[in-house]
Amino acid sequence: MSLGFLSKGHGRTWRSIDVWLKKLTKGLLGGGAPKAKGESGALKDVGDAIVASVECDRCGERIEVRLRKSSDIPRGTEDDPFEFFVQKTVVGTKCFNRIDLRLEMDARYRLIRCDAKGGRLVSP
Image 1 (cartoon, rainbow, N blue to C red):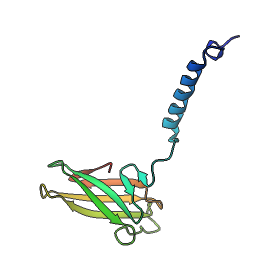
Image 2 (image 1 turned 135 degrees about the vertical axis):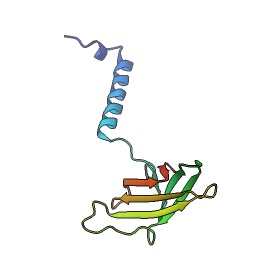
Image 3 (image 1 turned 60 degrees about the horizontal axis):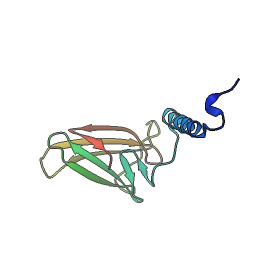
Image 4 (image 1 turned 180 degrees about the vertical axis):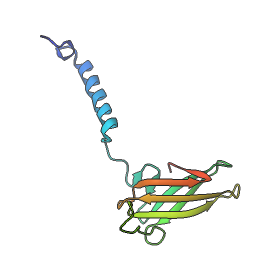
C-alpha cells in the first residue's frame, strides 16, 4: 500500500500538512511559542508594573492604566481562586463616564477574570 502524499516528489505537500497539524494542535491545546516578554493577552507586564488598557463604552476613548506591583495590586485571601486583584474606577478625558474595572490575576500576573462596567478591557 502506498501513501501518495508521502512518496518521493510530494515533500512540499507533506510539509504543508505538517504545518497545518502543528497549527491545529497549537490552537486546540493552547501550546505554541511563548508571547513576548510580559504579555498576557489584555495585560502587559513592564517589570515593576502591569499596564491595562480599557476602552470607554460611551465615547470610545482608550485609556491606559499603570498598576504598580508594589502598591496598587493587593493579594487575595486564601479562599479566593486568584492570587492578586485590582479594583479601580477609571475616568478618561473625553467624557466623564466611570469605568469600574476589576481584574483577577494568578501568581504570575496573568489575567484570570475581568469585569469592566462602563467599558471593556482591550489589548495594550
